[in-house]
Image (cartoon, rainbow, N blue to C red; front, side):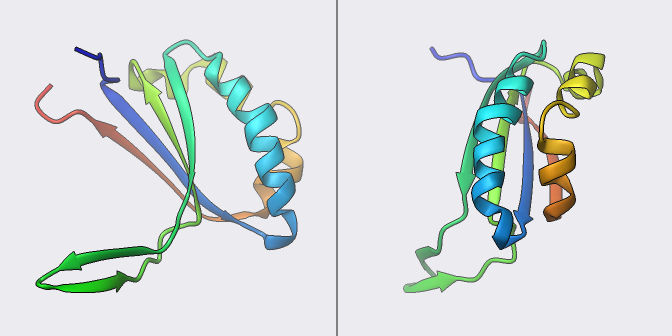
Length: 117
C-alpha cells in the first residue's frame, strides 16, 4: 500500500498578469526547490485552475469558480514543518519575497489532515 502524507497544505493565489511568466519561473525553479528541502515537507505539486464541467442533478453544467488561479499542494509529515526555522528561511530566499509575493493577491492557505487518523 502506498503511504499517504498525513497532512496537506494548499497555498492558492492569483498573480498580476504582467508577472505571470516570472511567477511560474520563480515558483518552479526557486521557491519549490527551496521548500522541498525543509524537513517534514515530502513533496510539492503545482496546479492551475481550469474550467470545470460536470454532471450534477441530471444535467451537465459548467461550474463557476471564485477560487484563485494557482494552487500548490504540499505533502507534509507534520504541520510544525510550516513554523520551523527552515521553513521561515526558505520562504524568504531568492526572488520570491521581493519580485513575486508583492504581486500576488487572493492568497489562501489551507491545512488538511487525513480524516480518521
